[in-house]
Image (cartoon, rainbow, N blue to C red; front, side, top):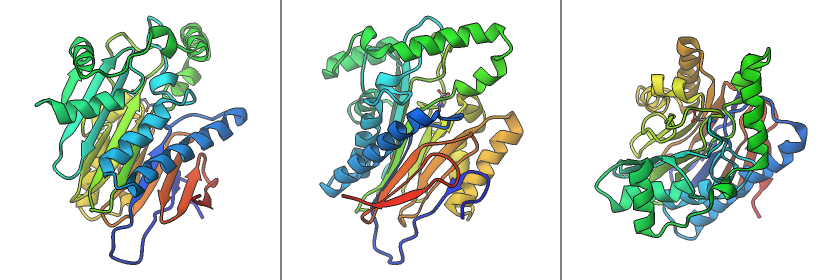
Length: 328
Ligand SMILES: NC(=O)C[C@H](N)C(=O)O
């Protein structure tokens, strides 16, 4: 019963009581090879479960999204943290952002190197500085001052991503150039959550796009593009072609449609279609609101996602592949 445009269901609790929920995505992507599918599926399920455990342990929505995204950053299957794709120089440069819907406090970092969990640094920017966004050297100095765990460059540069970069560089001149263009936007990760107090939050983290220029900043760390959270409307995390997402402010645009009375799913559909028709950009979104409703939607070929709510784990990758299992 899934419509053709790439969506999956909304959880709609009958009672007015808050039903805490965590929804995660593992990035809008082109076709995911069969041998990777199960690992990707397990990855998003693990992240949604970890985020939900954080809520059950009394954590806030911010704790839950940070926890879920950290799990995905640690998983080399996804383009964030340890699985980050490489820039044109063969280095990893990462972007991340986080936001609390309670008071709109936000933290973001870009062009981050040698840190395994950029989302933790983004949270520190939110909570320990008077600013919203630190980049490059300043962000690195702040990380050191905060005692954030660093890793070597080699630990983040995986063989798989080295090959991916080589292929991309070769393909640029070849006939596969167009196909490879759509394959660049892999696996960014994100989470949205609602906690028992009725607060919402989002977190998004990425290695960006393969063969990007050194210093390229995408949508992910930009509040309103890579995500947004406002208790009065909801929380959203986005994925897809960063330049397109930036041009249409995809996260805030989607929430604007919610403010105007659309359901989460309608709003997601309208804004993703707008991005597609206006700038030919593909992507995906996950959303949650304070009523505990949630939605996932994408215009890319696939988008691994999982949601944890009321003892159930929902999960999907492609259209018509949703599974629902009991949470252990
Ligand atoms: N896969 C992605 O979502 C890529 C990310 N939005 C970027 O362009 O940096």
